[in-house]
Image (cartoon, rainbow, N blue to C red; front, side):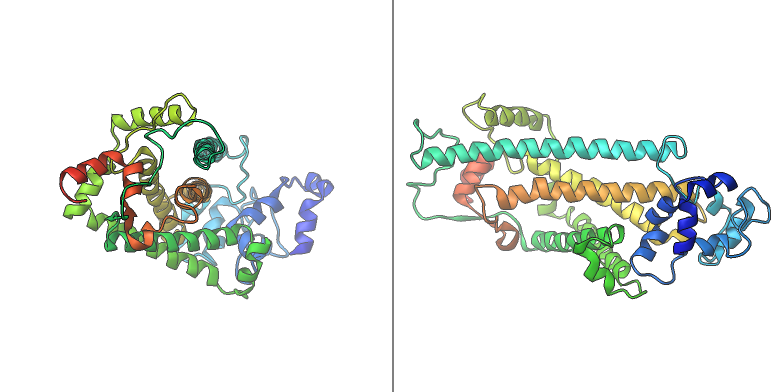
Length: 381
């Protein structure tokens, strides 16, 4: 295997025999190459497809990698391989010349990730600075008085607590959180098996698919959590949550108002209702991401079945989208969600609502004043 790779890497040999460059890299980045790097002894290597002593170019009808022979060659490992295995390149190079569609999909995701995460970082950075300044003034480090919109729990008597998440909602969140973390770890362990963070886990495989089955098990748990949530939405509380979570034009206004407040252009923050644009954006992004990851993951899990109906290049697109959507989701959780529930100065070291289901009356009054006033009018406080 090493000898074959070394031959492919020699430019003189590639030029003499007309072998395209970069084939070692494209193999190493493929699922087969990643599996071999992770210690698999059954994943396909160069000889699995090109054979040992009868290596021919794909243009040769007798070649094992000729288009008409690929179903037989691939069928050695993929039972039932048909003509769809030949509808797409085996060595996928993400360049505009070789794979233009994949190239632009990849660039779209890179741009989306950069813009989205940068926007999240800027938003939360402004929020963090604003709250640091507020805390500095509260401790007597600056002049001026605290505005009505800033957090001040003094003089309101004993603290009372309000139910924010029911036990059912907390279980759904718990299943989602645990499965997500496992999916992230085991997913990136496939892509970066040589990284120190994953080497110990990859070493457990010893040629067996421990990582892949843990990954798939976590995927099943996440899908079950999503299905549970869908079944929960028609309930009375579920309908109420969904109606409050629907995007409205008011969210656009409150977004602009909050940005103005964070930039010092407004004296008061917006008066959020039960869910702010921050929570709504996260919720609908979660819905979208779950659908995309579940769909592409299912195609990749049952690839032999999928290739009976889909061309191989469709699976290449699914692989690409699955990978970059994972990056987008992971970075969004770290930059957006973790800030809101952990690093936000108002809740640090953690917002415990996900465990207790409750939020303090003062926190509710500060973060969701319109909901607070409605509950107060209804006598629920």
